[in-house]
Length: 306
Image (cartoon, rainbow, N blue to C red):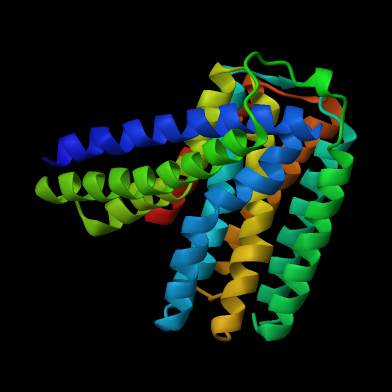
């Protein structure tokens, strides 16, 4: 039964990702906005909804450490698992300044988290107000910068604006539900084989938080819409810090737990700087980054476990 549910979950993930890509391509053509901007602003927010729900629940139930850990772990996985897998399949070339700017924002947010950890600054209502305000400003600027000529988004079979939005909303819904079903079924299967909870948590649960972004990234690579995948990853990381932690801070005060430590935060900054280096100097994220990223992710999982 669990294997059957696992397959259903994976199927929903694939269908959801396909709907998102089709809807986003059409939506971008209608509004003359780049796929990268759609990925950053709309899809990234949708794929971050599971983290938001779980983080609010964690704060309300006095388990705020889980919320912070999930954000940091998800951001790391997005950069060196999702982006590495995507770029390994289809390299991302012709990086533009708008995309580089989003990477710089990711670096700035990583530095802010390190600063808050070092000085033990709390996530409170003030942080929430500032974060949500900054998030709206970033997304507004991104939409303005992402405006382009409709000919730059080449794809056959436009849909109406309503159908495009319906595809995106339905796709995000299927991604979220499919991800939950996939991870829950995988955990049940692992329990049947008496695999320790620690291994399950480090591997399956951590992998599950970035599963929507990963499936979108792989299908984007197959459809050769890699700019869309890049926007989804960089946008998700922005939403995680400003949106997830920002909104969660309205439900209770918390801080970065010492158990996470500076190593995790510095590692998150390191991988963010690494992807910026490829974007800024090489104007390309290819299989070299993919190989390094996947190697680093395996090493990071090994570090967490041991």
